[in-house]
Length: 445
Ligand code: ATP
Image (cartoon, rainbow, N blue to C red; front, top):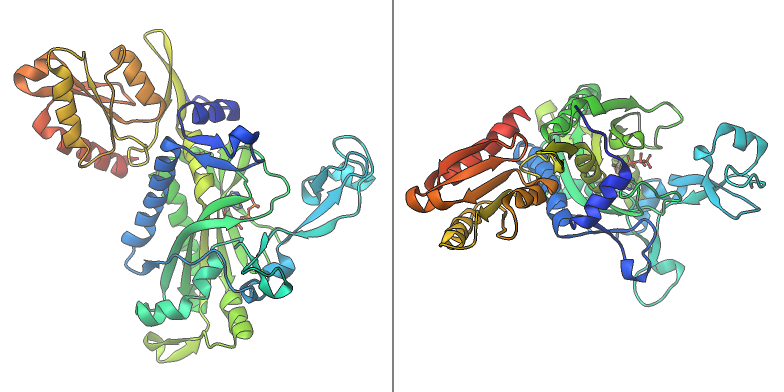
């Protein structure tokens, strides 16, 4: 039976076990800003590495990039963000609350009444979501810069550099992971929508005639990425953008949505951005960003771009929500995170059955050896069942227990988190066994 998780249960687990804390908590917190604790940073890094491996290591025509957050302000004029990256806002004259006009129920918009207090609403005004700051000591118009609202532009402005220095030929992609900032009006649902977040984006440059083919290909591949990560397919679906949802740069767009505890919501966007961005950067920078295609008899053109744009922090929430499960072991409730073994913050827990009689020493020796290859955690305190349970709760896929027999024949028990099956394994074979189990999981999901 699938158990369903509430956001309260998730938030509480994340706090209790050091995944995610409220930002600046000792000062009462900062709205919608979150910090990743010892377990959370491991999980986030592993999700990122999983994506990076999928997108770069497993494709010989995709390379990486790490562009800066602050860019020349003209970039955001060229990209259309200064003009178009806005949300329509309405204010309640009575309770002074601010809402996104497109998120207010139709009835309230028609009657101009606040959905919270019934007060009168103002007409919608456009509000730009980009954060502004100043570069250098003088706060003047000339020093205005923006915190990037998407990582994509760092890729487009480096298009020529990558072609020339990494000798990439169309079709090829550039992948990047990094922070993005949006002054969102309504932030809620934990880390789902925050003003500071991380994106994992890959921009794929193609000949304009091949846009439909590559769009379809990336759409499928990106969907499969999530099932490979262990997310159940029944909670994933596509949503095609209607004409009024399409971003200013997009010809066609599909979202991959996940069924979160608060409903179906976007996890990743796949967009056909055409030659919009490169063309605009050519106009604004006056630099030639056309591409000379030696495979197409020297045809010169501005490549089209198929963009796959995923939220890293939003994927972390997805992975947690999907992995959360509760079952019963010996009459006791067990919380277990059924994380893909490559995403779990700790891969192997090592436990001496008791501390005395040399078992702790042997267990430490085993752990020291395993930690060369895996993220390990050594725990010798309390009943063994409780120690297993603590690891289940943070998703540790393997547990190794050292008992009296281990001293005699150098074998240990290897326990699997999901089935709770225990098998006897020689210490000398442990590493291999665990590695094979992880590979098997990657193959079968
Ligand atoms: P939304 O409609 O939810 O505001 P969007 O369509 O503007 O999102 P994109 O610009 O396509 O989102 O961004 C790509 C991805 O970046 C999204 O699919 C999401 O995973 C992530 N993302 C966007 N905004 C946020 C945010 N405020 N907080 C966390 N992740 C975000």
